[in-house]
Image (cartoon, one colour):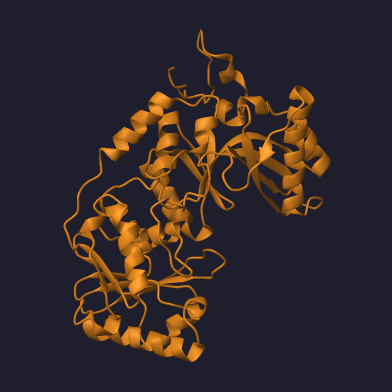
Length: 404
């Protein structure tokens, strides 16, 4: 079946002989505008990434970015984005002053065009600035009831809820008096890349690691090193970036595969086209170390699951014992409160790390992510710049230091 083409008027015309399921009237089909969720601190970088992947009419908004895309670009963005957490395909929008209206309008959606027999589903919901609807969880419950009653009234049965691995993921967002109901086209949070087989305490979120690599502007012209690599998330993201490995290459399925106009042939072409651009890497261009043997083993395991991961050496070594690390891009996420221990120990640790950068890393640029920004003041170094980078409830900062 041919993909639906987007024409200049943004109206999708039904072709002769086209299956009736294409006329379901979902909002994204009438106007192929989608929503990409991203941390507010990364909006500008997200705009650039979307445009590079082929998106049009890229428009920043609250907690994300709206964009237009033809079907192949839509698939490509889901498959290759490194910075976004979810891509949403809008089903409907409406004025919503209370949860009774939410329930009523949700029952108007033709859910049978998204659910197969025995499909399971889950709902994520968020409410903000609404005078009457103040509880996100209750709003999500009302949407769940509407879907369940929709099927019960038509078939006598209702689909089951599965919060761990649902077939259909539905996103509800209510802001002020407007409700948006969307399908999670990514099929779950995109930071779950699939390469993390081993982990340690408080691992870095993959999208934040990808953002650090992005903000470092590292292009492979000089080595990249992580002297406290933990389970290797920064190194994995650097490898995928440098080798052009799609961020979604390990995902088993995407949410857009349940959409009524899903084109499996086009999706296969998009995947093969992206995978064909993967390139090798010189051994040692990316490397890292950690004082903890269990962290080194975890990093090696995670890297070995990625294309060319065997080209990234990992050493068991305290950063204080590294002899020299000059003319290098250094990335690191030093331990903070929940990862190490006493505050006095952490202050001394960061002073020593600052001394290491100053004395042994001449000509290098270091991009250090502080989960607790208070410890940046104990580095004893002048920052080139600082960027807020919040993730997982942390008020984090990314700080660049240039050693001359």
